[in-house]
Image 1 (cartoon, helix red, strand yellow):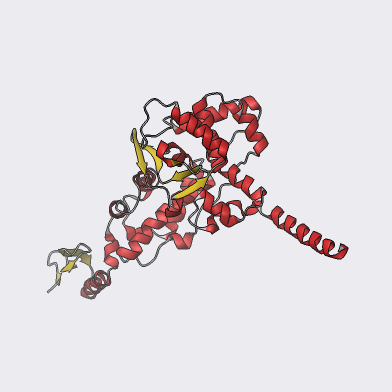
Image 2: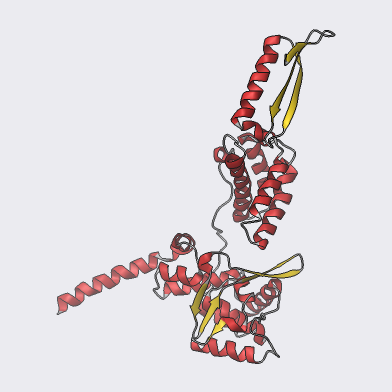
Length: 358
């Protein structure tokens, strides 16, 4: 009989076997019930929970994170995995690691959110990333460990998807800065970034064979430095694999620069400086020119802004930037298009005026 009475103190004990989430046969013992009915009710409820699969949520959150990362490793780039590992280690495990998954309630998540918001001066976009990571892990538990629901859906998110700190240089502002950068390596790097809109990692992964005879640049990889090791991997998304047309002068400058690199091989990187060195060089030149500093990534935004101002469609901008979805382009740069819509109305009005004249 799974339920029996303790002759010493008169309480009831429930002892029975069940199969855990790993498929292992385990014995469960629970003592101290005042009534036999309470012990039997406990056994029924526990076995019903185990059979429904929700018993799988007995595992610790730290164990869930290990399983999540092991599963993700086969699907994500090394650099992305490193970012995930660091974020989970520093922002999630210190607060939630010792909790059982089933005990992470909306109130738990809300308390964690408030701690992250109040104790750290993180940007809105980083807060959003941290929360999204927690939500992704708990969604993983919903899919594969039969967690009834994701408590993050009740609490809602924190932070913002798009940063309000995105800054843009006009062409005139950029020209006032680039003329102060005399080093030919850095000068060419910034010219490529501003006039093509490629990502910083894509720039640092460029090799001589990526500069095509048709005055185009082939983007087919990206660079990152992980644990003091240079890593070159596939680009961010499938659409990031692209070929970008460049002006004649930029093609000639690039080829001239490559020709001066001593015995460089076709598949060797042409820019060997670090991302921090690139940023530092840009900041110094901006300060000297009296122009507000921007991030390296903002050169990409500046390129997109210039294309929009020139009248190019959101589809053309998305293709050149390598966005996976046009919606990404609209969400990022949509606020720059109202003026173009106003110009369109003026042009239509002028067409009618011209018809009236004729």
